[in-house]
Each structure stands twice: as structure tokens, then as C-alpha cells.
Image (cartoon, rainbow, N blue to C red; front, side, top):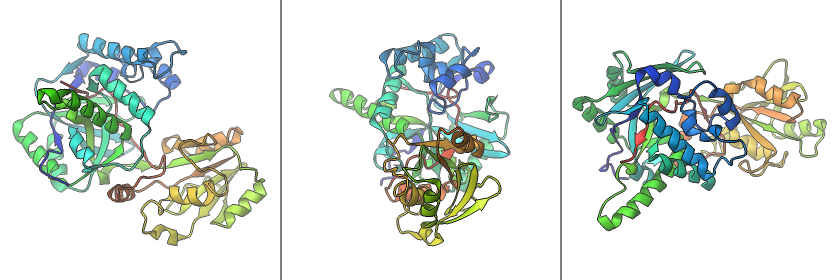
Length: 418
């Protein structure tokens, strides 16, 4: 792993003018379904959902991956630029980005992260990607000639990096938006050469960064860069600005991971009594008088037929030499979901679904009480240290292991490819 090449660099961001920032800011493209995005965009012609989920402006019969969706996205993007709603900064800058919700505060750096660092594993991943989702993001980047969805990155503790961002955020923010999700998003442009040089020095000496959220966006950015690099070879050029991708980098210790819960459609032919007996053979099981929210690793809650149970796996299982096998989501998959419920492929099996912690345990009860699902499992959040250990080992986590909250807003800063 070489530290000679830059890990990040500043860029001239495309941003909404202050008067329109609240109207533009939108949830990430993969948080809302198309139906939810249609509803959320009603009466909001400037919402970035018209760019990130342009199918909402087309008939429902149109496939979400059809060419006309990407064309509509580009049309809507150019309309915001033409109207002056989105304006590009005159020179390369960094941006300090702060999110505040329910007393939680995290402050990071918006930067263009190196594709070369991603390809060399200096920017490390912990998830597999799906080709169809990569293809979708590649088409979106190419249609817009811009990266509009930032990749969420994390860095290990670095007091100097945090001190520099504290200085950069001492004054009033350039952008201050409160979203419908009650998350406050603040942005400070950092364009003085001295601070830019300091930030570049501090971040570029970091040995690694970790992808927290945005594996498909980063993989797609690498594919776009490779394609442009290949086209430029005859002219002895490079992939240009496509050699970097839009990112927001937070200190790992400031990031918040919520539980990512599981619901299963049936008991795989078991009666309720048979299933409870089978669960008792691989974990201790205790009925609860209220909702069971796990309070530590190796504990999970189970909701079945109107009742909550507390499951406790042997604590010795935490100390596996394999960082993946010691994860709670792995313990559940290996001892209950697979052998008892017949869920072998968490990515493709339609009998299982996943519920982000932001929706609460009441959503698990609703899914089971409605008879849509038979059983639900409430998970303990995966620690950030575990994510980094898995990435350092070059391994991948089970699907839907982490739910980062709060989510970055789309539309506040975009990276235009020159």
C-alpha cells in the first residue's frame, strides 16, 4: 500500500444557492422506494429526488432501469443548473459537513477520494456488490457526467483532522438545512489555500479509509474511471476528474450505527412449539414482558406470535479468530436462519426481509402481527470497530449488517466530471 499517491483532493463543488438548499436537499436515492419518493416530492419541484430517482417523473409502467429514466435524470439535473438553482464553485475547495439529530453530532470532510486508493485497497470495503446495481450507478454517472450521491467513508482517530474541521466550522455555515427527517445538515466551504494544504496533508497521510455506506457508488466510480482511462490512452491522457469520487469522511468514533433487523416469512414447516424448542438448543431463550431491544453482543430479540423473547448465544462465540463469524448477524444466520429456517442466501431468498433500525421495533411487530411475516429478530448494532476489522482482514460482512444513521443528504454537493 503506497502513501505516495493522494488519498483525497479538493474539487469545485456544484451546490444549491443558499435560498434553495432546503428545497433541493433529499434523502439518498436508495433509502426511499419509488412510491415513497413520488409521495415525498409532491409540491417540491426543486427536490433532488427528481434527479436521483427520475422515474417519479415518468409513468409507473416505465422500468426503473430504462434508458429514459437516466435521460430524464440528466434533463432534470440540467434544468436545476440552467435555472441557477445549482451553481458550481469557481475553484477547488473542501467542505466541512455536519449532521445533527437527537443530540448526536458528527462532523466530516467532503472531498474527492482517489479511485486508485480504492483499487489498491487503501480505501477498504466490507460488502459485496451486485452487478445490476453497479450498472445502474454507472449509467447515472455517465448520464449526468457527475457524481451526485456521496460515498460515506470513515477514518480512524486523528486528533489533528478533527481539530482542523473544528476550526473550519467555527463560523456560521454556508448551508443550514433541516430535513423532513428532522436531521440538520450544515455545510462550510473551505477554500483558503493554507487550510486546504493542511487538510490535504493530514488526510493524505492516513494509511486507510473505510467505506461505511456506498459500495455500489464507489465501485461504479471505479468502472467509469477505468472506461475513461482506456479511452484516453491513445491521447496519453488519464481518466481526468473521474479518477476521484465524491465522498464525505467522518471520524469512525463519531459515526452511529443502528440495528439492522430481520423478518422471516414462515417457520420452514415447524410448528411454533417445535421452532421454540429448536431455538432453545442453540441459545438460551427467555420470554419478555416488553419489547426486547438487545443491550450487548450475542443477544438478540425475537418476536413470534405476539410475544417477545430474549435470545442469548454463548459468549465464547464472540471470540472467533474470524472477525465475520463473531458478528451477531453471522451468529443468527449460522445457527437459526440457515439450519432452522432454511435461509441459505440472504441476498436472494425472498422469504427474508430487512428492517433498518430507524423504523423501530414497532415495525417488526407490525410485520408479524399482520401475518405478512412469521417471526422477527431484533439485532444488536454492529460496532464500527468490527466493520473495520472485517475490512482490514479483506473479508465481507453478511448482507444488511449495518444501518448508518443519520443519512447524508443528496444534492448539497455534487462532483462534476470534467
